[in-house]
Amino acid sequence: MISPSTGARTARLPSARPGRTPAQPPPAEIANPQNIVSIRLEPGESVSVAPAPALSSGGHEDFDFLGEHFYLASVELSAKLPLIGLTATEYDVWHAMLGAQLKGGIVPITVTKLGEGLGIGRGEAGQALARFALGFIWQERRGQYRINPRIAFWGTSRQQRLALARMPDTIPRIRLPECTVRPPRRARRPKLESL
Image 1 (tube, rainbow, N blue to C red):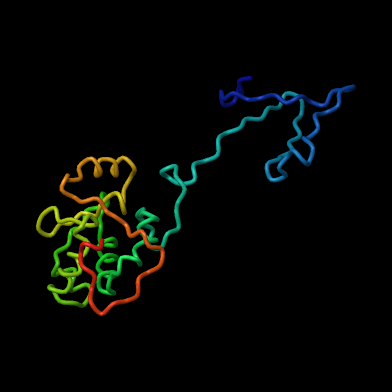
Image 2: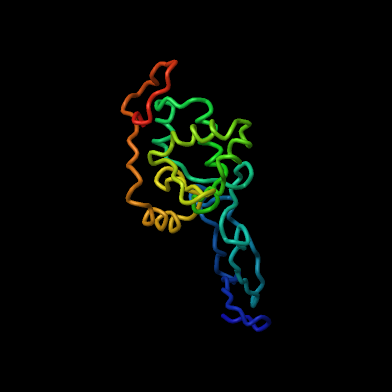
């Protein structure tokens, strides 16, 4: 039925007529009490229903991450990272690089700026960054690095697929350790080949 006042489609509910029992709400075990609204209409009245507004302006739910931004990371890598034998500085460099990335996985930073942010020298920052040169992070050009989109990515699925397609063939495949218990700490640092 078309409402004469608004021109919108409306549904006419049956009115209480003599000899006719009004429609009963569904049984309690079927109905969700939060979704039931009882409306009593007089003969000739109508009801129109409009869709609920979107949750946010973009139509997506808002996520409550600290700082409102987040990236996706490989669960397998996170589980195996302690088994690789990184130093405290290397952990700091890894997380600083992840936190400095822009959408698409690009990290616009120089080794000097990285070191300054961590309170260490350029040489120490560069040495720690070199630990991840075997497939975790690579330098695209001076002052610009890229995090391997297979292990951590900030962006959409489409952007990640594009980044994967553009990965240079020279980037080695990451081999995670097969052990399940972290090796004992050693005075001497493991060689890069252990990654």
